[in-house]
Image (tube, one colour):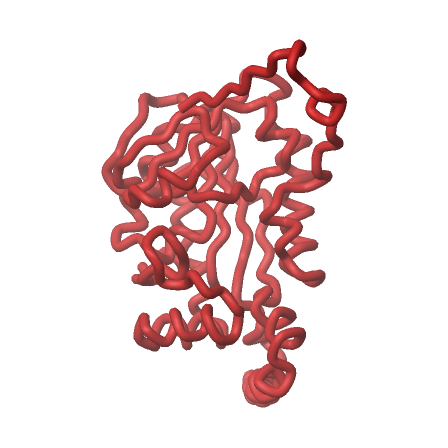
Length: 268
């Protein structure tokens, strides 16, 4: 999918021809409230910008909707291929050069095809994560990277998401997050499966077995917490009190607010 815009200088106004400053960051980052999630994504961006090739960059996005989580200067120098099983997600995508309606669990590219595979907020929705990850590994060039953003199943929000019905997820998105389109075709939240490999320790073991080096790993407070504190302060105070109590009984070994993680894996 390639999109071009032709402008006729003879009929263009000064406003049309003026160069508009590009946004400093992708919309996905701008949409994040200040906090640990935003800081971690900025760190991810700095790693990708430093390590990815300066030209001829090939990216495979496994699952891709209307928003990219990649830094803009990486997107601008890349050919992005998106594979998604959802027709609405494919239709909403406007930044990829190529979009493919397919299943990331079974769709395969030729070996050594990509410098980067990104799978962001996707693996928790996939029944067979191992099959998808093996496909990612096969398609990567040597020293290529896999970026995964996913929820932590062992966090408070992860446990609630895993064991609550889908209608509750839709209710939360609509009434707590304020997303009026939640649950509509092509719009989050999507049904979750939470395959065992979504758990960070299992994902790390998989990486070791398949020649992948974990070069970045961070669990962070879910952005839902600062969202709730801003939009629903009383509800957020109750959730924070529950999280504080749970952390006390866990003896400081973990923070149940760490509802999400970023991982970058490098193919040896």
